[in-house]
Image 1 (cartoon, rainbow, N blue to C red):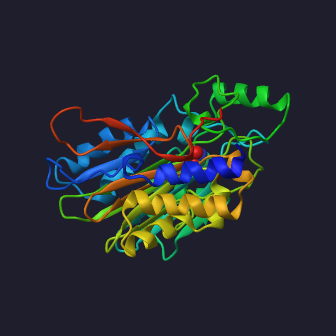
Image 2: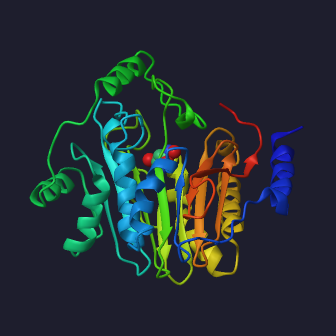
Length: 335
Ligand code: SD4
């Protein structure tokens, strides 16, 4: 079967109701709910739920969840344990947004452990939306964030290994492989929450693509690409090769599709289809994943390739930290 036919067939299959996860809000806590990308979203959700479950705001919750991921010493793709760029420099990107359109972001930030909190400070304490590089670091230090070298021995070792080939070749779902991180090449925590007052917020934090060019910025800190939130409609976030999200203003697109009446899963699927239509060949070799939540607390996801999972926490009885498989265009995990 040709790839084109396989894609069309997979798309049709994925369009079937059974293949599209659509989770209704049935929360034990007045509709509060949090969802996060990837397996490590479970830990991020737990941290966020401490805030949401006690009546806290969605904004505080997503910051808490993102900070948890940034501190996770097992994660080579977010925060202090991230893999560096091709020059051996660890640079961090993050954004945060609430449902009223308030947002803040930092990109290419070095030696500051919690970029999401710096992004929040940009949002709350400056007239700007995004600070980058040395300016972002200068602002962080002025705000009292500690400047400390973050590159771990493990990350330095992984970089030295990578230097032996110096091949930049992002691998599909490499984020699900454990360290030694010679293959781990992309991953991001995207976290979306709705609180008991029906307010939405989201955050996105990453060390970006491992072995990227120094100075490269992905989608995660770009409002509308890696994250978008609108209280009238819902919220969306993304993970995967960020250039594709930027090309398609993808998280904004998902929210706008929900505004037109699409379910979160359908909106994510349409955004993925646009990625494929724009770059059919490239889409076979790279991963792109979307996660969305609407104002009613319904959650949906869709990915280019199989293997994307997301975690959900709503405080309801039973297993509190559940992982869900996302439907995808291509059904074969191409790792
Ligand atoms: C980036 N989107 O910097 C991030 C990386 C990522 O799964 O999410 N990887 O392009």
